[in-house]
Image (spheres, rainbow, N blue to C red):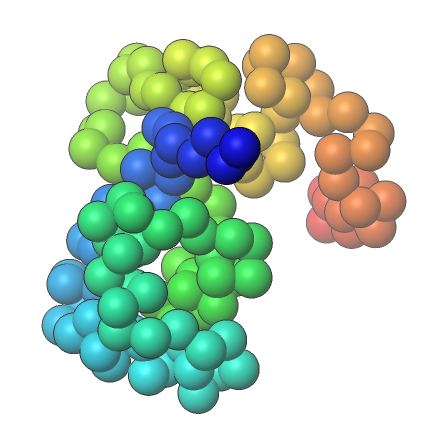
Length: 135
């Protein structure tokens, strides 16, 4: 019996849309994005990029990182739901519907998903020391 395919959820759709929009905004073709990923050591074909953008192929963490590098954005930006300019908006992420400010704070390790302070294991230890030194 074949395993049931796991559907791409809210965050996967967000990543696909963000890649599409950022690629197009930067004037890159699908083929150029694929070539740059391959040149960076993460072989992606034009077909693979097309499938990612269409939501038919999952983006794994290695894809996410190389695509963020190529598109010159943080990985958090690829994960952040688009189309929201209002600080009071609520957005969908896989497993939750959260205020946009809470999602960004969580993605950037500045808060826990519930809005509280980040857990001690949520950030490398040097981050807290670095931030204290900046004060």
